[in-house]
Image 1 (cartoon, rainbow, N blue to C red):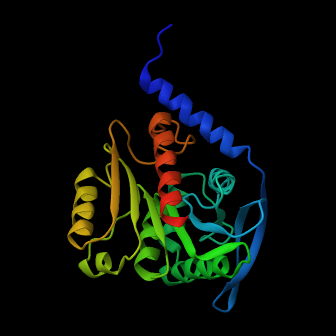
Image 2 (cartoon, rainbow, N blue to C red; image 1 turned 180 degrees about the horizontal axis):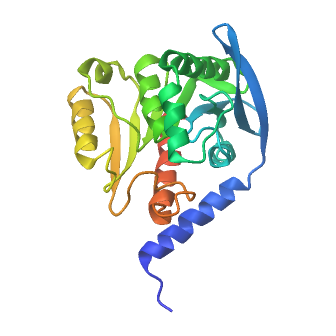
Length: 251
């Protein structure tokens, strides 16, 4: 039986992901201060001793659901101390209407404060290289990943997956870290035209940007819970791109 090269590539990437996912990691719910409040997040870390690079993970508009925790464990298995923030403070959604309500009711200043607190918490951990902290987000979280890149000058890398893109020149200029982007060609919100405009503005400002637009993919193509929009081949490639990117920028 003849195996198509594209299908073989998916099998290889899936195998590598399963190998990484089997590595020993520790998980726990951690609490840390955000202003005068205590917030919590889901932490996964390698069991190997020594200092590691770290990642802040920002969830989709559904909230801190099991899929996000799974991604956190996968990044930990790949050698990163990974902290998934909970911007909704314990709330999650199962319908678009409920998710939209959570997004609309989220105080933006509080969300940024919580993200800055997550950065500070990771930087304070004994097993984290404080100058090697990155951020990754999907959808709603992708937009917030870029907002953190605008506001946190010590951030070392940012990966955005089909998230809202900054357009103001002063925001583009404020981004100091390399940015990786994964997007769908059929996304009705984060369109290829918007992606190319962002890419062009970043390059014009002298910033490091690496963008890929996946043919045949729409919004949220990396999440298998998206029953109609999940694209396993594109998702596997996007994951591989992110791990390669963070290996290059954070190690």
